[in-house]
Image (cartoon, rainbow, N blue to C red; front, side, top):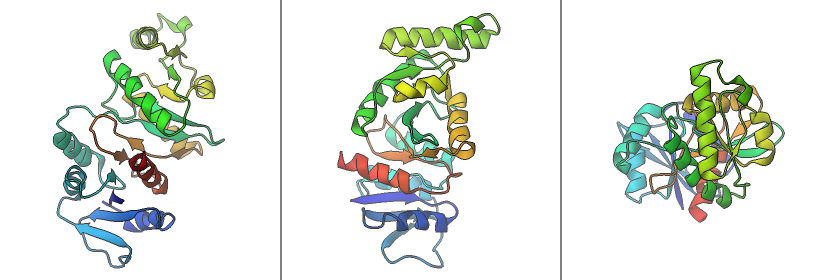
Length: 247
């Protein structure tokens, strides 16, 4: 099994992450420049545009799964959209709270999940992922306020009405703005939009002592696990990619 990992910056951080799991798979590091201290058990794919090369290798079958690693998001996601033939990517983040409660969160891309239909698609595709990784597949839909907040602001009102409609159409639970309650009994959390989802992810993982296990892209027919360049370790995301290949 070959797993490709993008390396746009801080190659030592990527290699240190792989050291922990070196026997789990073969690894190919996609990067722009030759390293001063390469490791003999890692393959290195050097190119002028490693973002495009990583995506091409995935779709050409040269690797079984790809992890973005530290490659820049904008260029990598653009290449992925083009090769997959889609205008929208649906990423679902696998998160873990400081007290080890795991759940799926979507949308987490700032340009994702801005319509009722998009969020329904996230629910449809997140449930099989939850089943694959052994999480509760019940869904909590969040909004920008409680029912009692209706009338305070038109944007808040829209998030509340959207959450109610999504819950009715999918049989999910409308948990209003109460994410702290939603994670207790639901394995899938649907944020009001991509901005709030991204903020939830960053607050939990970068400020709140939580952890991220990567964000698989669910609508491209290939295994691609997105990651944040702000992360300090990528072994969880790589292990997720390995697990998804096996399943």
